[in-house]
Image (cartoon, rainbow, N blue to C red; front, side, top):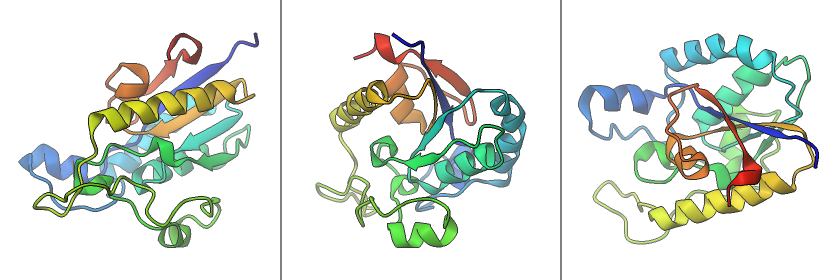
Length: 191
């Protein structure tokens, strides 16, 4: 078996993260982008990521992850392709976890292939709460993490960078990652 590595990178701080830290209340920042601190975290992490022999980047379709992936890998010495994968989305439990249509995302991210995304690629099933949000069951997130692990195992690349979200990464790795934290995942030991 070829040795492989999967590098998990949580997105930089979003405007939602910053507001939540202050009030512990959902600020209704739908598909929250990176905050100024988040952009600085991405700039700081870029040096460490530049040294990684990344063959492929797989990212969530949420704006904060797309901004993080672009900030870390645009101009990377290995020029890895960036694939947008809907399984990597965050668990829908707040406004920031509600995405945008591929057409809306394409305006901001014209270099990315988004055509394979459904118009509504985030969890939208069930009865909405008072904010209008259909909270995704934990079992659904765990199932997506298992599916995504199988996807990673089937990939031929030796080094894959995965840019995503805290709750999803917890279900994928068993670890809680800080904003812009980089952690290696042993995909061959997890189910």
